[in-house]
Amino acid sequence: MTASTTGVVFDGQRLWRSLEATFEIGRSSDGGVSRLALSDAEKQMRDRFVGSCEESGLTVSVDTVGNIFARREGTEPQLAPVLVGSHLDSQVAAGPFDGPLGVFAGLEIARALDDAGIATRRPIEIVSWTNEEGPRFAPPMMGSGAFARVLDEATVLATRDPDGISVGEELDRIGYRGATPCGGRDVDSYFELHIEQSPSLDRSGCDVGIVSGGYPAQYLKVTITGETAHSGPTPMAERRNALVSGGRIAVAIDDVGRAHAPDGKTTSTGIDVWPNRPGIIPSLVELRADLRHPDAAELERMVCEAEAACARAAEHDGVSVRCERTHAFGGVSFDEGLIALLEEEAGRLGARSVRLLSQAGHDAYNLLAVCPAAMIFCPCIEGRSHNPREDVDPARLAASVGVMLNSVLRRAQA
Ligand SMILES: [Zn+2]
Image (cartoon, rainbow, N blue to C red; front, top):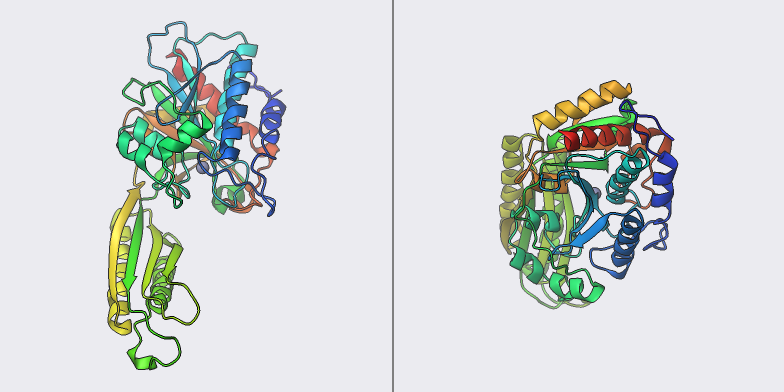
């Protein structure tokens, strides 16, 4: 049992057991987990979470885009609830903590309040957002986006994966298209605990990261059109090879990130090639990339440099290149009142905390559109994430869970 300054204790071992019980779900041959949104593995995660919530006496509801809410009633049920949560879906070659940590830590908070016999004025709802990661259905942070009306619900439900299956069809198949309307209700505040995903917190020696905001990020889609021709007889000088141009642009985008390092980050994340067969010069390539920088003006410069590289490649390779700005997120600041509350509670717990920016996307960004929101990071070992070797030191987890528990309790009593 771990003590907290308000006299409420939470059970760190119980939280760890809840997480451990999910480690085998969606286990992949690389030793990590793959729980793509609305897949069978993610349904198992949902079922496990819902079952645990119901065992704990929470009232579970599911909204029309599959977001799950487990409600611990308040003494004044008409008050807007405090939301605590994260996501249960994962990337393709992922670790087991990115997302589930925040969801099951929320459940542990509810259990700890039960153990202490504490009734809060406001209801507390533990939430799991649909499709935070986005590798199957784009864009990421979809469920929270629909809830906060940042994304259009009908568009979300009609979004198809690369196999042509829609979000709505998959919600029906796994039994998680709920009846509760998505969003459109008052929320007091939102708290999210998450692993940090960069090495900075782990290396800082601090156990609690208070997230002040998030890097702005810009996704790009680059479409390159060349011309098919025989891979043998066609003279080198007359080729319009879209794949070669795609490679050139991928390298150039990487160079943009290196030129703006350490704060600037660029990643070519995927490429599709057509016809992608032996004996024929590829005529069509779609390259996807994301660019990030804590300073929005600097990010804009990076995007312009990437666009200029596309134009140079078009010229050099005799192909046509269209570079589109697709999804953008981040560039947000979390609520100063909640940040101050988290820092105060960290101080009361004697935990060393540090303010930092998130370099990843999170549902909490969307929640800012409807309520004050804040995030707490715990260190993950070496900052490895979206990687089968992602890991967390349970001994360094207690501080961040304690800070969240106390902050949620203060807010729910306010
Ligand atoms: Zn995550």
